[in-house]
Image (cartoon, rainbow, N blue to C red; front, side):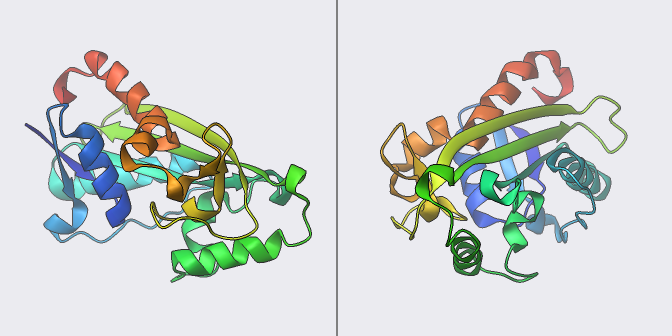
Length: 201
């Protein structure tokens, strides 16, 4: 199994990546297993932040790193919360806090204008000085509900309505979410590209 360190402290993301990659020859390890703190996300885009996180883990562990930077973009808020999705309601905000903040911001916005998408950027770096990191992206279209629905998932899933399945992301079966989500789309692109990424196979 190829060791791969996930540049994230998010347990939900770790579980999703472990589930998605377990049959692909990768053993996904959390950066916390190496005693690492998260890198400072000083980028202004998902791509910049993912690169920062991946390079930080490579430098500290000497192992290939997989970084995910993702969030939700709401059209009525000009793309916010975007890269600030995890801390929309403040630096130590919980998912509940962030969901409440989003509902407050959209209180006066009619249903037809509550369109949104989850966006994910994945970066795979073989080592800290990798000049050609693999960068893959995925997007998942939906809209924002007026109240949380469902108990599954994490983040904004209870508020993210999936039109193709007529339910919230939090109501989806785990296997189905892992098949259609923004992260799954980005990961499928990543897996297809690994044939051209010899040392990370």
